[in-house]
Image (cartoon, rainbow, N blue to C red; front, side):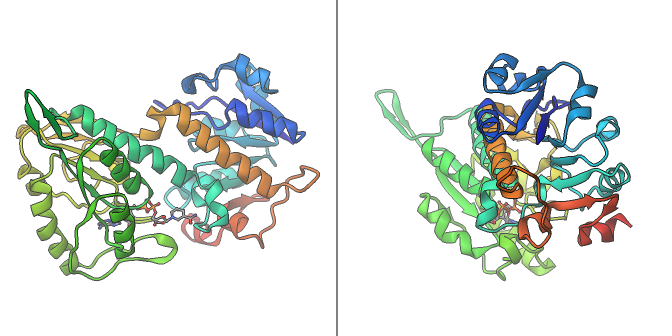
Length: 376
Ligand code: NAD
């Protein structure tokens, strides 16, 4: 099977879908891997390294797309990339098909088979292929590093001859994959950490990382597959009342709350942020999904006129492109192993839960029922 890796063209994207280690293993399994020249540079992976791992380096984008039987990407293809894709090839990339059904329609029209990397079901077996989880881990870590950098205070408690420095107080809102990694990172830096999530089941995980769980007496909002449900109005009011007190005394607030297929919930309205001390920091990981903080400006880091720095930078995983690519690449390897038979031939069996969840287009049609509904 010919697996092709193009250079990512989205602004600011530094990751690559396969790193040299994975290339080596895939070539060892008798696949051919073709990589566009320069595709790995943003992730410190040179053409020479990829070539040494067994990849063929292709200087022409058009030729690369023309050769691809399976094309592995990170960002959803833009219009020009859709046009380049070979009919009857298979594309694996982030695609957000429920939010962007137009892309699914365009790929179906081009007779491209799409496996959406963001539609991996949340099952134990699928965990190894789950790019949302691997990249959220990176984002959670990065968010804390950004907060520590923007905060004009130390994170750890220090007892020195020049005085005692109290530890920073960090509040993490949303304790899913990114939130738990943010808690662990902030704890490693020595902060005192509190965390809150609408799914009460995470309380134990939060506490096992050495953070305090903020209890709010509202209904549990655990939905299916580990996802959260949207809160009712009264619960939202009560949540805001309690959170306001914790936000006001925090030096840094990291927000990670998301609800699948919906705009991210606003957990930090402007008046809550105004009550934070001057010099405090908010890092909003959900910025691109609409933001958990009302004052977030997507893609920006700025200091408000009342002295709170708000970080709404896009694509935090790309800022740590080496390990983000390594983890994405490992997810891709596991996925390819799952969908190929012992002779390395691609077999997309829709009775398989993982294939069923990810397969969006095939044979010129949008075949995923939920996507087909919105793509009408
Ligand atoms: P996510 O990115 O959808 O959301 C992040 C967090 O925000 C979630 O914990 C959610 O409960 C929380 N949240 C939503 N609304 C909120 C609100 N109003 N206030 C506070 N918090 C709010 O979720 P995620 O990080 O991808 O994962 C959620 C769960 O699913 C985790 O328990 C994770 O372990 C599990 N998971 C399992 C698998 C698997 O088994 N393959 C894969 C991914 C995630």
